[in-house]
Image (cartoon, rainbow, N blue to C red; front, side, top):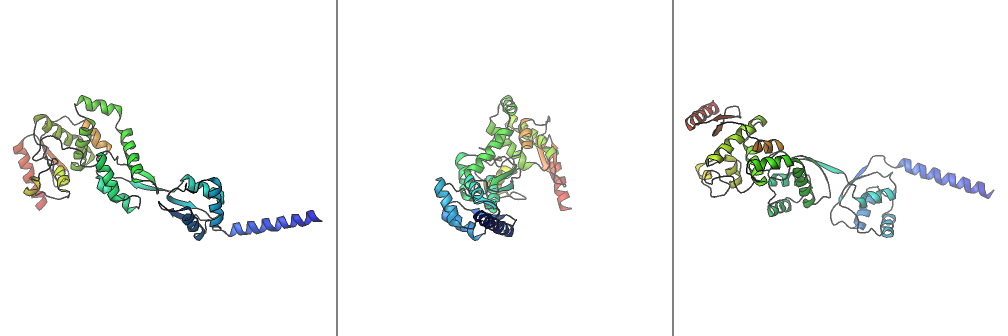
Length: 313
């Protein structure tokens, strides 16, 4: 008789648990644990969101495991149907939902910082400060990344640097030596090409012009470097802009600027290493937004006048 009663009780408890489990929402709930959030605050947040039934049980499990200080900041997709132990493993293991971020080619570190800040992934001022401190402009490789919501600025920067190292191959390093260029000079030139080029196929041609100018000891006269110096993008630079005192003003300073002016993509890096074979020394924007290239100054002046007429039309 006793066994029958116990069996009946077991069935009733099991059925009640099953009914309760079936009543729980199937859809996951997004829980964001910010940096500095205490274990108790996180537990209350999950309880109020319906992810766990008791914050005390969660805190007890944390204390029992000795991992009360092991909660990882991040954004988590948690289902109320998930066991308490599984939720514990997710939030202490940092298995957060990752945020997709595409860094466009030619973005500066400040633009990248603003992009990350818009997705609430980084403090833009801290991000820029870290990049400037280590002189990492140019090495934040443009790519699509999946950052964890709790990733620090340092971690995101290191991920981008690792991607640069993967893409700047030993063969490229050897090619740089052949050109008698350091890695930084290659990246600096690539960053200028990135900012100047309107189309991918133009990159080797633009690179050729800059290489030719460097060989002859001419000013590079890149408007893109001047814009970087004044910290502003303009459709047309003024005479005052062209006289700004800065190592990045390639209208008054010979050679390459002190460092990259943006973070170039792989095509621009390749163009810097493998310029087209030409004797062109000039290029100017034409009416379609691409460029016209020329060897002689007189021809360049004609191209400029033609470009100006097209703009007026």
